[in-house]
Image (tube, rainbow, N blue to C red):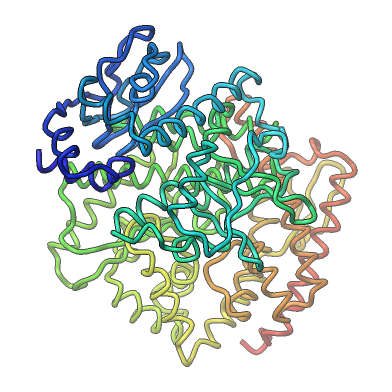
Length: 613
């Protein structure tokens, strides 16, 4: 009972109860466990006999075969039916192994009539009504190509930063909103219902705390002309559930939440990620990840940019990796030291394609010469990589993976090695390993590991030789010069029947951006961000940076289109494009892009003084 009371006390609206009432409710609560996919409420239409609180896991609420909501830890269901004394209109099932507190109607109903519970229940009902209205008004997938301005269901609740959290929560409850937008005068902040629970209630803060102390600012926003899928991917990328929508004049139109989008976007990456998170075994993750090809095709058909599709693929890859790491902990035991799993290469740059393989590394706190620890980390890496391969994310063919001892080290050893490679880039595959140091993104574990390793590079006193070696790598692969009928003409005079769009197009741009970004002070970043920083810092002229960006977008788009077509036809995606399949306009555009890349490579060659190497 004490455990139940302690849990309820930490979450609204139970935190408003006096101790006597809270203890009575906790004493009456029945603790029930439901395995994944089993029914909790089997049929709709009957009066509710219990209210439910999710202790752990998650619960799906369905009307027919339509998913109308997903309830997570500390969220309630069934209480609104008790309060209104109306039959349940949904069934409930465990989305994963789930523990719930079941509270009898005779105990719950008197408590539900209190103002705090009435407001909370009204908020839930309003949310549900909005969701059902959205589902009934539009066919499935209708949000895919619609602008987000058309998806807003209610005006935003806007509050000043000095307003108390209690007053803001009252306004949220009155209109059934799940967040308030805070107008700071200099921009927008946001406070969500989750923020109220975690930053105020759980921390024991006063209800009079001003919104300015708990808000997230600046808030992530989306422009009104972006599509619903793009908005959902923004949420996915930044781990948020609400997006203020702005007009071109930066005026607030309203707030979009994930429920509005999830109700209509059945193939959205958020769905895949949710399925991965709920999967109880490898087979479940494989099943969820099997939707990736179909999702790529759907997103491409919807007209989304290559950058957006790549970001979605990266997010799904990260979700799969995290779930497989959790399985590895269950099967092999958790390693005895804190560690970080790092994505490198295209997944670290958020530039994945259906053909992308997995580059990754491990970094841990602790000794580097403990052989038992090394065996533990190797077993973990092999377990995860095998799972990733089964899920459709094959490991790098050059063994740039965490199971290779070269790419699994203590953080201190990564830092020491980085300094060595900087001073001696031709030793021990230093150039390749340095690319890990300057191009990695944490997927699991401490997020500062990649930063610490990158700082070792940035702070090294003798990094000029390494920069020159990176510049040399940036000009080593020359783009083609053009086309002759259905042949690709390469700079060395040879001819080819296929255009390798990755090797001959994207890689030269990525390599130049990697070098110029580092010179500009940018390490781990997307190619687009590196080019932008290079133009702003003067590493490249603004015109050269813009030319490379245009070439990169063309190459990226052609690669994604080529692979989307292959997926649709059931083929394994590759990077080899037949010139015969290119239109005359595309050929001319490619030829100009190749010339631009070659011209910038000559500029890099001169700037880095490569002739003296």
